[in-house]
Image 1 (tube, rainbow, N blue to C red):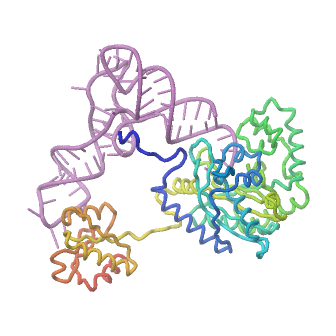
Image 2: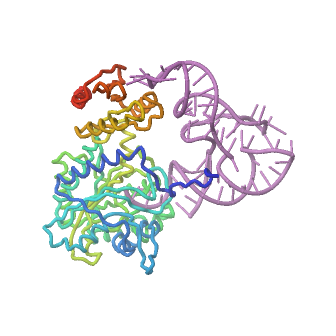
Length: 428
RNA sequence: GUGGAUGUAGCUCAACUGGCAGAGCGCUUGAUUGUGGUUCAAGUGGUUGGGGGUUCAAGUCCCCUCAUCCACCCCA
């Protein structure tokens, strides 16, 4: 009966147990690297006015149309769990009048996001993103700096050989021009298009470019290229970005089909995918959004940013480098203090505190049901190599016993010297 | 929202055309009352996801439901 009614995590949401240390290491790496580039961390609320996403992300986008966790509060206001991070940051930029700060404003953030979709490999209803936004500079050098920072982060996490897909979706005028061309090209081939693409032919022809259907891909081989219709400003912007990325040895490939799903993107767009992740293969994506702040009722301020899917990043890392720790982290394995008998717990606490005061990770087995045996077994199961024993004999003699599980030896050392001895033994 | 697969012990999985629910690992105890890990011995483990139906008899067949996984879609 207890089994039957046992609680379970909500569909599409999971506990991070084994993965939690890797998440923490990824987050620490992000803080370190992004700070190095002059970014500072912000934290925005998990809940926002629903309208923020409708206007920011776009009513036509799938995210807003079908995937939001929306609800009415007690006053009847429509609120939503945030499905992405850029619109909230843009909102905060306006709310705190960051336009009066030295431009550009550079921020990063991390935390949970929510989309109501059917879960599958690499897709959760609550997932974690690490993002950064550079707001207030329209120029291509900011694009390059942001991408270089992103690659540096991935490198410091421990990834090698990740390739960035890069494209330009141009300014809104270029896109309107291109949509018309693409529609003209595809119209005669309606029979070869699936239902989804047919619908997009009316609503958002650009999205047809990233179709997975082989027949449609073949058809698109002969389609006009997006970059061929870019205006001269967008064109030269893109050229500078490519040229500078090459100068800084960024491994990128121009992908003509790369368009991204959020409505606010302009000019530079990019993403990194991996075939090792299954169908949900994007580990990060981003781009420029020169019209977003204005769409939200603010001044015309350009911006560029990215979002890293932390769950997918960790999953890919574990798949590519089994057993390896993120960022080469190697936490200190604890020394285990075992009081021999319940009446020596006081000494156990004292000894473990002395070790911690010296910066040595220590745990104490207060709960050994029987002297020694159980305590040692626990210490072993926790993966400790070094055990400090304190009992009747040791207290009487003013000593402790330091046991080395690796070769089964142990030594008796003076209690007032034991911290130093432990320190030298574990670092040997 | 659509489609497919799978739910048996804490974990990984067996159980023939319906016939006594099992194994390995884990866990507890002992061999060793102050010595772990190895070994040996014993023990602990379950309303077979839940509900209903067919049957003398259901883990097995039928219906419903829930969950997980994978794909479509979408994206991180």
